[in-house]
Amino acid sequence: MLRKSYVLIALVLFSATAAAAPELRGSPQELEQYLQSETRTVSIRQTATENAYTDRARVSLTVTTEHKSLAEAIRLNRSLRLRTIQEFSAAGISSDDIRASKFSTSPQYGWFGKAPSSFEVINTIVVVVESEEQFQAVAAVADRQKEIQVSQTEFEHSQKDEFEKKVRQKAMDKVMEERQFYETQLGLSLRPVSFSVSTARPQPMRRRAQVESLALSDMEGGMAMDQAMQTGTFDEIRYMSSVQVLFEVETTHRSGGD
Image (cartoon, rainbow, N blue to C red; front, top):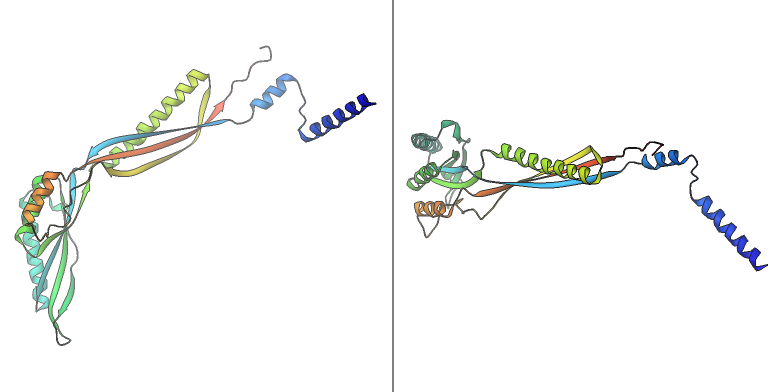
């Protein structure tokens, strides 16, 4: 009686398991083909970097003139800007690298009365320099003219597009090299089905000298620029790109005689 109970329990467990799992039928070759038809993928990701140096600077100069007459304030501002642009051209800076924005005016009011006591005209000149000599020429102009101040300096790399393409290519080559390694060592065939690329903005490798403002209380403008040039203003930067490729593992089916 005890033996019959064990047999009954075994039959119940087998029936429950069979009902839960899908039923597979067919020859061994057909079952193998079914199992191998499931898509298998592998993702390979690689990162590449390249170092370069900023080789030009975009310097913004603020030109400010003030006069009791608005017309005279505008005339003084225009005259000063023209002289400044001529000095930049004499220093070897191309006219294509010099841009002047539209001016803005702001009346200056006195202590009493509603009428403005004077008018202030402000204009910005943006100059692109490609050498320390041109940089110093721009600083010299700002030093000589109290109406002109360096308001901002941005450092750039002229070959930015080329280097971004270079790091993408380098990262992709590393992915393909790793793919070939797996195919050779494991006997696989990997077919690319999708990919993604991310490129980071160029990052400075070391702290850039602070030359955005040269109006220092304890130092002349020229001395500030000299110190900035000595500490290094055209800095080393790093480009970085990451490439991720999704591959499908292609399996070679064995013949029935194997």
